Length: 359
Image (tube, rainbow, N blue to C red; front, side):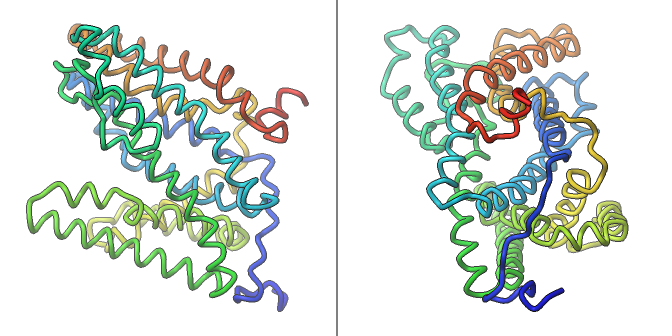
């Protein structure tokens, strides 16, 4: 290690990572599909599908998404020409499909709602559209007369994570400034510890008061920040993770196996960060999954309203496994269309997804 490469406030140059071949696209697809599978059981309540929630964890999948974002978004910022370029890239990637889904759900909701058109197109719809377009889904998750017979009436309950992502996008430039003034490692460790403390305090308050309100607060950015930081550490210190990969992976797997006897809130983000970054970047590339496009975002933002619609019509009651296949086919079809007609056209030509189709 040279004098200039030490992690001091005066020398925090971004690592020059060349990750042309990696498994990030595959992992994101798998994480999104796990969320879809678990939500299929949770929303439908079909006991035949309960095995999905026993074998899979949507919570781990979402937290893994945050780890991936921590790695890739810090890398995106460090590789951007300036802060404007960074925010333009983030907006191009996340907002077009998000905007489309919010508007489409609001319009098509009138077709499936039990309310008359006159009652449906009310101030509540305006509030739904405006709140959701600002990533404030919690302010108005429902639409008039829509999914009233379902166990959950929210139109798209999966969108809660998007506001956390957006807040993280805003946070990244501030974090990098702190790196340069105070040193990268001290800032990362401090943020990680603060996030863990926040999460533990919120969980403790939830147990003490019996109120789920504190669990909702725990799920917000301060409580999830440790997972982003774990991904960021994987990016900035990738050379060490790659060098000691075998030991770190064994330790991470052991932590998951023994979690009941460990301070899990403090260990889980780091353990998950090691495993996600290892499978994404250290393991051999399992094919160029990205050449087909990135359908993970589309799967994530569209699966919930599709499931809610099928459930509202009672189609999961008779043949839940058959309907799972139908729902999966619909989700994949819409995700494919979103990618090719909305998401991809808004990407820069330098994006590896665009380049893959011209190379």
